[in-house]
Length: 385
Ligand code: GDP
Ligand code: MN
Image 1 (cartoon, rainbow, N blue to C red):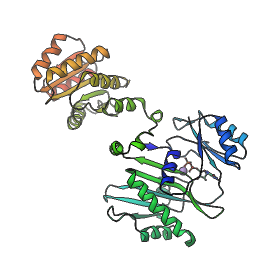
Image 2 (cartoon, rainbow, N blue to C red):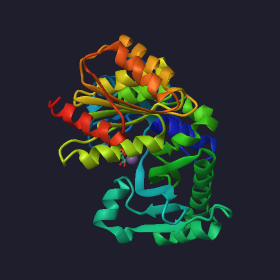
Image 3 (tube, rainbow, N blue to C red):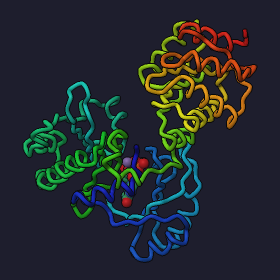
Image 4 (cartoon, helix red, strand yellow):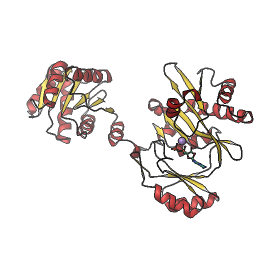
């Protein structure tokens, strides 16, 4: 889950990382009032979950409250790389003498967090890595020792930071690491960390990505999710308790269990002949209750590329007849004429198949094995059955 710049900087402030004392606005009038309170010049910054806002026109300097009003009026509603701006951050403007990159992420190969810095701040780190990889300085952090002072100094020296800033830089780096760990982040980034005209260091821009798997214990952060910035189906899936990942194929997959879902996708790919692929990963979890199946079906069918749906349900604790009833009830809630192939296995699978046969729904085909199911779904997607 991504945090907005203003959310990230609020979090940074809790960890004593210096940030500007700005406020957010959702109307030009609000922006004017904030600019009046701040006195002096301000920057109006679009809050969208995508980088490169500056280049896209989403960051404007305003020398007066009226200019802040006008800039906000222009930026709100703007489309930045497919994200519509609904909120702006009004920060006091600062004079900048240099821009540094400082970020922490997980290095999965090393099994450790990695802190990276570069004297070429302001640009995206991927760009620096491509154009001038030697400008990036790295230190791997031992999770048991944390970021050591000497490591922070190595970085400061590696990016040729003037010595007078080393103490402040070390504090910022160590606070950033604490913030990263305690937030269960997979990325915490200051870009740019600036040296101002007054010769002080502070975080001009911030970005954090929180590990979705840790949100259950990060309720304060989880509550800050901006659902307007993500695909509608992903919000719906999460709210229904489903794990859903959209893919680019033609066969919608409705499966209980992550391992079985992966196997189902593999089978479609195996028999798909190089032109038919799974349209999604979907784990409806245990139980396969009607409301969940209905929610999942709605999500699968909202994808216009889906030509056929393959149900692959293994009844373990859940009985096949209950699953079958759930599917039929879901089909009443979400009527469709798309071809559907149902493979039921496990406890009471025969009873379940009988229930589906009795319902006699023309666009439903039963399959006895997964191979059979995958082949039938592929044929249906090709319009062959
Ligand atoms: P991003 O483009 O989405 O990464 O947004 P940033 O907040 O990083 O801003 C992009 C660039 O705008 C920065 O690297 C700065 O060069 C410039 N900028 C942002 N705020 C200010 C400010 O208060 N004063 C000045 N002079 N430049 C700023
Ligand atoms: Mn930035």
